[in-house]
Image 1 (cartoon, rainbow, N blue to C red):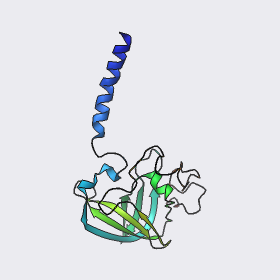
Image 2: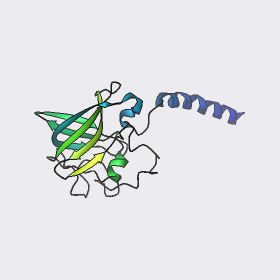
Image 3: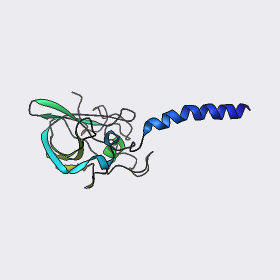
Image 4: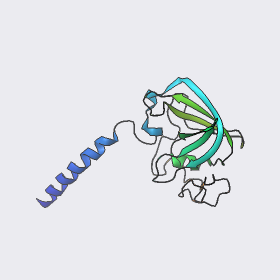
Length: 171
């Protein structure tokens, strides 16, 4: 009887939590399914890196880029994917961002690609059909152990505090 009550209590608590996750959530940027992304409406932004913020448990990493005279935040995607790709822009690096239109997204777009013109590197975040390239296994499956961008082991925050000299500096 006691086990039945405990099982019912756990089921009652788990139901609402699972329902809030909704379809299409997971490692996609802002939880946006590819079906809501219009790859036929790309746009490009060029600017200078101000900062890269993110880390385990801190939500999606955000790249802040100075575009003209304004600092603009761009949500990128999986922290694990970024560290596995050794993505480490430095404040002042010039970047070109490829954006895909997204009516369902708060910003009106998703970042498909970040080309670091200073370091001559490219980080691909979305496939040609709009699906995130970092979707796949969770818990380290499919993304590698992380490159240790700023934490040495892939577990530190992207705030310039880690041992990697290519990490973005605190602003």
